[in-house]
Image (cartoon, rainbow, N blue to C red; front, side, top):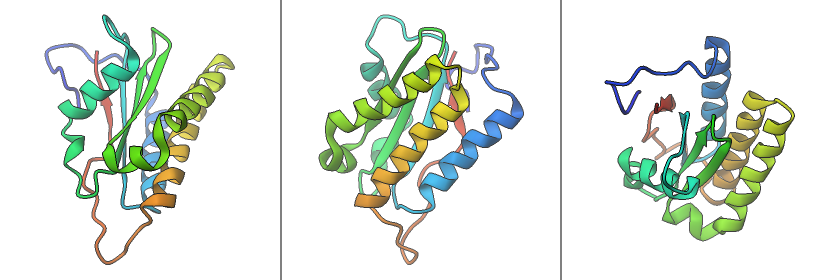
Length: 153
């Protein structure tokens, strides 16, 4: 899904890499009622990456999950910025320090040119936190948000 359809989508990943990222999202969500989304764009202009992540989170309507347990992994690749934003339910459990740790581990992987594996590691960490506090409930769980990668400009 491209939030800005009038702008040409930049190809950040190969088809194989996209498949790996989507599979990481699905794997993370298999053990939790929580949701994980990935938003990727080139630049984060005029604001902090954390503020941009919150803005995108709201634009995507991610605050509408039943348990308020959605997470957004935000990347501005050309600006080398990343952030994680978690809705009120999961944020109350893990707090800002956890999001910062996830981002720090990803950025370390990026420094070693491990972009996709770094993102997958971040997704795995979000899934682990969600599993701990919002375990999968076979009787009531439904996929509330799409698993696709959202691309900005």
